[in-house]
Image (cartoon, rainbow, N blue to C red; front, side, top):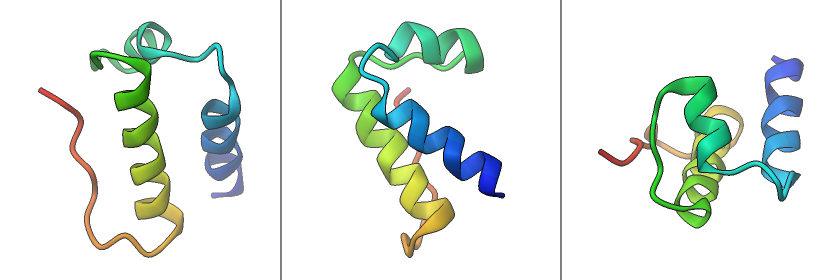
Length: 59
């Protein structure tokens, strides 16, 4: 679980990681970097924090 957490933290802090990189990894499209980073923060809070529901990607 620590590896997943550190991977999320690394992606969220990497300014060069954007929608095209995420799409290559997951086949999920995001319209812009801001929407992607909001989704990643929300997913991080769901997995490692106290968010009650899993966020849904756009689409």
